[in-house]
Image (cartoon, rainbow, N blue to C red):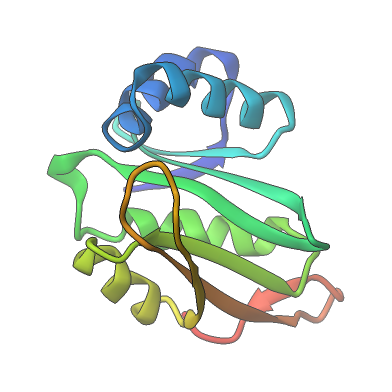
Length: 152
């Protein structure tokens, strides 16, 4: 069973390891520590092990933005990213959620579509060289007034 919870200090090493494949070791440590300090870092856990992480910001042009999502290789395509995004959607108060991926990551592009995101634009001239595709998802307010996903 997959459990998603806010990250704790003890989770930093596992989150940095997961993020290192995407952002490189030095940058991943800064990204993870910054998200932890802002309390904007989630972990997915199974059997007491961190198997996924999601970092986000809630101050991006008045919207929320996923800045990192990474799932351990042996847990991919098993609902971990979906569980992380669901947990995020019930935590944020913004009705607008953005996420991105390089245009070369076909699997992540398909995942965004499956999670109800729509294309929203792109950013060129980033250091990694590939165009970064932006995705957008409108969250509908729940009974308590907090946003909930309209597609999940």
